[in-house]
Image 1: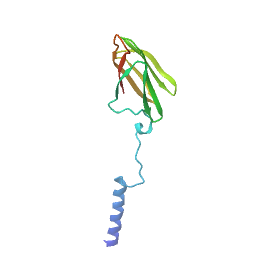
Image 2: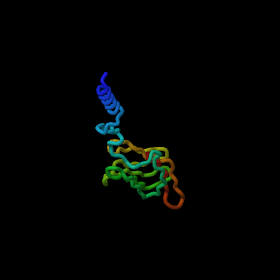
Image 3: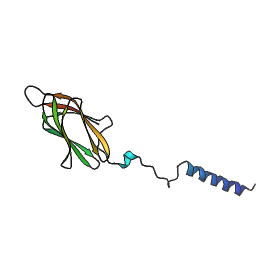
Image 4: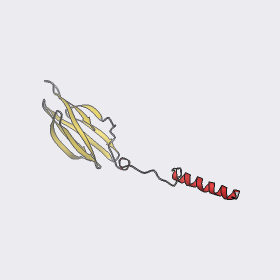
Length: 131
């Protein structure tokens, strides 16, 4: 076999290995569903928060923010509302261990009431978990 033929076959083989191995810069990185959608900036472990009555927490997202607002707190329940763009997405009286689910750009999130604390004197507080 001629030496130039061997060299050209080796070059062709190396080119094929290069293309198959993914080293070619003509390939694009595939995007996953999570990368292509908008989402709230919540860490994987979630957000744990102790909120007083008549207060609110802003959760920033990639396409606007969501506000979790606590209204009146009694010994057994708390008035919680979820707002986005000045519109109330959900509002209800929630007891301990109950949750509210809401959607943000197609992804579902949960606000869980872990504990309600209402002293005899002063404002009540609500311990929340947001996932």
